[in-house]
Image 1 (spheres, rainbow, N blue to C red):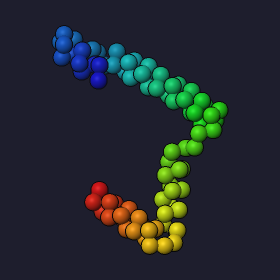
Image 2: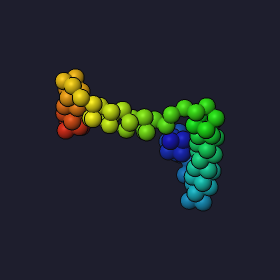
Image 3: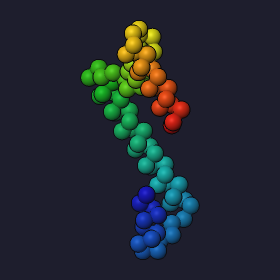
Length: 83
């Protein structure tokens, strides 16, 4: 939020062209950093993808047997209804 902060501090109002340029540059920089991080973290290091791991753990809990597994699934669905 540097642009609204700049407007509050010195009263500077930037034109739409400057704001569009700022938005494009910051968005492009974010995508480039994300591509680099993906390459380093997922491809080279072989770290598991977090969403896939969470889904796999949830499916393991749902389809495992026993009283403890049933209790965990009940807690999972109770938290789902509260959220």
